[in-house]
Image (cartoon, rainbow, N blue to C red):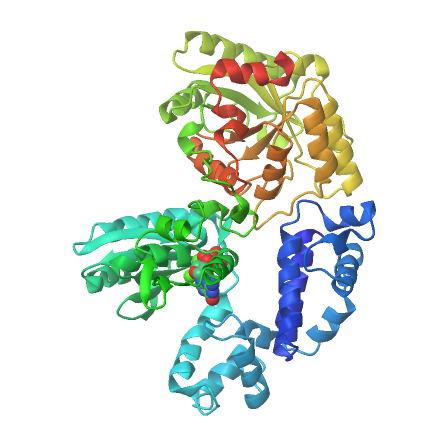
Length: 570
Ligand code: DGT
Ligand code: CA
Ligand code: CA
């Protein structure tokens, strides 16, 4: 099992045990372990190969947990999980997704009312049986009824691009309303997580009714799920939910900090406040009754002795150890884009149009990298067509001003670990990106062999979208990142963060590791049309989530310096 699968299994185990009334300490240990495993840079399977006791060195993982994790990693199974799964009906697990219902309440409903499905629960609540339970009441019953449809649809997450686009549009409409002073995006969308569960907006508004009305009637909204004076929960036509909260101006910073999350980051923030004898909540940072910070975020971080932490890094993955303010890479820092397609293969723009599109975006240099022949469905290029394509690019670039153009290729690494084009052709390129497209499900040893073979080929300058994943639809190839990154470092091969929001590949964890190894990263759009360069910002934010600065990203260099850094030119 991969780390994320192991983490999901541990989380499921924690949920189930909590429903079954297991002690809170044990449950928390499983949840913490899930998070630890999920953010490990190496696959557990690999760690275990290196040392059978490797897991014991991880924080919060003792002998018992280590055994469970190792069983999941090596066999994909865990007897205890099977056992507790059989004790809890799936409908009861779904009830956990009803807003405001934690495992304790769900367990009560299940045990006291014998409800096993969301339908059972709906019937019980409609009949007024929920309100009669101790600790529930009429109000909870009503919110359960409203939450059941949400729970039925829960679990769907959308790509960051979909989330940001909707959040920005709605925030902008709200900003245009008279009586609305400020609107900001919070939650996972502000942290630029790869996917978002729902959208969170915060506003300062003298006229909160006007803000609420604007949201209720917004063309992107399909349904108002709940509306109060200062809080509204709507469903968008795209299926995703959005929460808008109107907060007092003096608390805006505290609210923004709180609702940006992540929960894990906020847990540490609250603890740091407590250690200083302070209390932190969404209204401010308090010493007793006195508010000492909270109108802006900076003041909160400063009072806790921290630099302001960029939202992308707020995941409790080392950001509290940062010394001083960190200047992460910004979208405007990119000068080049080294991965794009034209009508020669599966792109929609001609060579001239792509060059023009790139220049209009402000780029100073690009590489045109159409597909190699193995990608037949994209009309991939063989040696003859590729050389012809390069001749055309060369003629065009001689007449082009204001932007430099490299003759490149996105060359497939075939299933047998050979490259899709002969060495003598690759040698003629200005820039070669090697990628896996086929055989992504091969065993880890074969994937490793293919990546290493590509890296060892002197004509390969960069490995593109290494894992081949498509977020939410195609699993990543099983990569031994330890040997892969080491090889890239040894051979001076650059690694790509593919900025396509469905790829974002390298991911954040591996990008951070590549930075540590000083492997130059390139952030590329993989554009297939003249407007495709817009996605570069998603790649930049993925890099920010990994803590990358301008110095870590090769295509922030000017053309001459970048060119010198390419392997073939050194
Ligand atoms: P998502 O929506 O699943 O992509 O992730 P987030 O991070 O946007 O989570 P969401 O929408 O549930 O809540 C937004 C932020 O509000 C979250 O990142 C931290 C804060 N928050 C919400 N509920 C809690 C909570 O129960 N405890 C703490 N400490 N923070 C919370
Ligand atoms: Ca959210
Ligand atoms: Ca939310």
